[in-house]
Length: 364
Image (tube, rainbow, N blue to C red):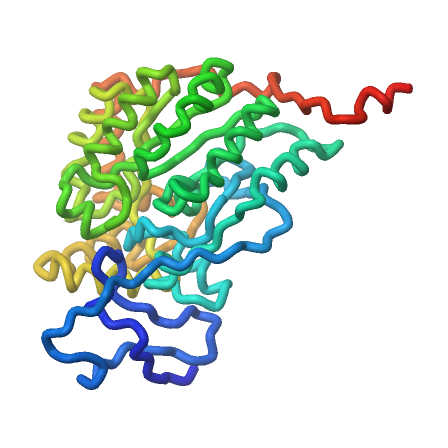
């Protein structure tokens, strides 16, 4: 790989972004690095913030199949590629390398939207051989990231799912989900919807630094309350748990969520595959330099001496004494707060294919 200089992104323009660099993806022939030679701007000149660019995705299908033994769903939908929330730890960042873009700043500033998602979904659900299974949304990038407020792609997807009486499970870091209560509430009444709010920390300052464009922790907790009061089964996902950074908040997050009406809870240990390792290490050195070495040391202790281990059945929770301690603390808090009690699964038997023009003629 050849190294070339790239001065197109200056850190002065990265206000409100999660990562601090924009290194080339692993498939690129050239490795671009930032170099400030002093000529690009005056010393006291402040660059404008980097703007988000939303492009149109050309996918011809919308439902993604999955056979991982580590997760509970077999099919999902991603309305967007890339995510403006800018979570520095996001495990989806490496997917931007497939697009010839950087998992760094590009991932949170160059987005790909699927404006025809509802049309594609209606076509796939109407296929003769389609067998309904719970659809997961928000498992890769957030369906309620800021651009959704304008584009309303997720809302159009929900409208189709409600029309087909199709079950859906949603994970998000955004309070924007409460906008769609008029769809989610009647779906939940039919046993077709559940939601989990991902809350990484209760510390507003840490959240703003680590996940700069996601809703504040208090807004996410309030979203749990609003959903619960509307009859939508709501839960909390502590993801990721980062040793020596936010793991001390585990019980407090669960308590706050339970007080807001959460019925379920889960957690995922920090994962650092591919390019995320360097991005996260860079973020640590810049934001919590006094803890950076300790955090990475504990991560290696929970990953068999490596910074990441993708082994099935352990990649979500880690191994070793420290990981076991986190698991035990979580189990005790869940039991004490009466979370994760058995609830009816989402219903598949209500699925129907709405009648279309010309269907009656087919009977003649």
